[in-house]
Each structure stands twice: as C-alpha cells, then as structure tokens.
Image (tube, rainbow, N blue to C red; front, side, top):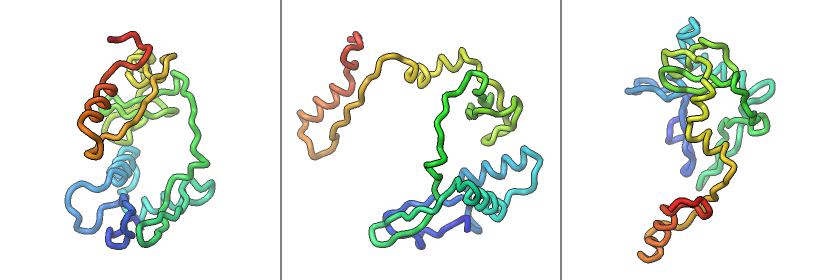
Length: 180
C-alpha cells in the first residue's frame, strides 16, 4: 500500500504518503514525482504506485534498508517503514566524488558525469572544488573554531525583560570571535 488515509493513522502520528490518492488533485508527493521523473529520464517504463511498491519491498528485503518501526500515537500504535539507521554511514567525500545538477543544484556523490538529475531535467556534473569552498555550509564545517548554540525559551511564559535579553544574546557575536 503506497497510501494511507489519514483517518487510518492514530492521533499523534504524521504520515507522509508516497503516492497521490485516486482522484487526488494537484501534484503528487515528492517521492512520486521523483520516481516518475527518474524512470522517464532513464528511458524506463511508466512509473506506477505498484512499481514503486516493488522498489520499496526490495529495499525492505535483503540488507533491510527499510525496517518496520512501531510508532506510538496518543491512543494507538502503528507500524510504518523507516530508514534502517544501522545501515546509514557518513563518509567524507573526496573532491572527485562531488557532483551537482547545473539546473536545480541537487547534490549527489559517486555518480558518473552526465547522470540524469533525479529532481529535474538537468544532469549531474562534477562540482568544482572552488565552488564547494565558497559554500557557506562548507566554510562553517571547515572552520577551526566552533561556535556553540545555546537555546533558550522564547515563549509568552517569560517576562519581556528576559525575552529582550535572550534576543540580544542571540544577535550578539559569538564570544571570542573578535566581532563587535
């Protein structure tokens, strides 16, 4: 089943369907759009919810990329598929492994140059290391100084004086940054 009716899900659990329901208007969910586009770009067959379900069943079998997990609502529980966290690995990419789409800027590692973008009509090309170094997130990660994030309550439950103090501290430069 690629779609669950919201009435079938216990209160307190949010479900994101992978396929638009029958007679559903507008665009379908993002995974449906990307699945159809990718099959079309690769010269494949027409994407259907049954075909996507076959792919999801494949991912749930074998090395078990997807696993059923019990989610607890406020009154009932429900079992849904989630990514198996035990199989997720974080890898530091070499510059030659970085690719991005020139149209929509989707970034993917370890693909062949010219691979169709899964999100648009573009294709994936090597990402110039100089451009990577200009990316603000990359610069933030590569910096040798760490700036701690200190969270504070920002609700109607604090006084106006506490709120102003919290906002001023949030806007202030990090300690030791030398900025004024």
